[in-house]
Image 1 (cartoon, helix red, strand yellow):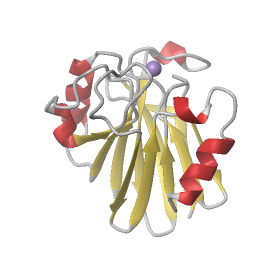
Image 2: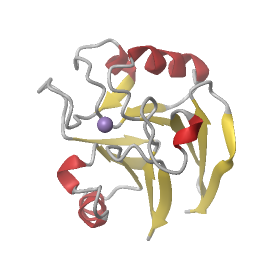
Image 3: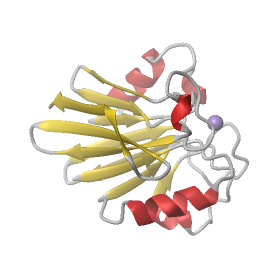
Image 4: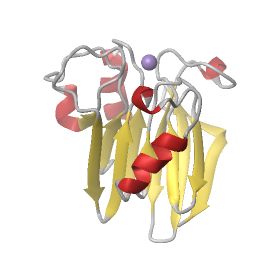
Length: 171
Ligand SMILES: [Mn+2]
């Protein structure tokens, strides 16, 4: 089971379309907020999306919960959970949602870790990256879920896997 996760495009609709052509075979596409697009944009027929602090369309939800092949995914942008300071409220809300995978954005800094059994992932910003990996020019993530493993690969805007940003976690 394969998931594509993108965040913080800030108006860059073209890259969201490009990623769909780079990753045509995913089981789910998740967009973690700050698109600055309308919720009615056709992109969101494919991407599940949440509202970011820069989104003005009230039709985006604050959180999304989805079950794909028995894997429960919970997503939010993160600004309402103070993710610039601590992940604790985000983790608590994801736990309440009984998530296997927690997705968020907002910080524009990629990161992935496993907390208890949950995979917690920020794909980084696809258009305005910050932090240690900002030099990559923007990233998104592909998560592959098997019965025993989460595999995470970060990719550049060109769809190139970043070798040092490949991770494996036991489920
Ligand atoms: Mn943002």
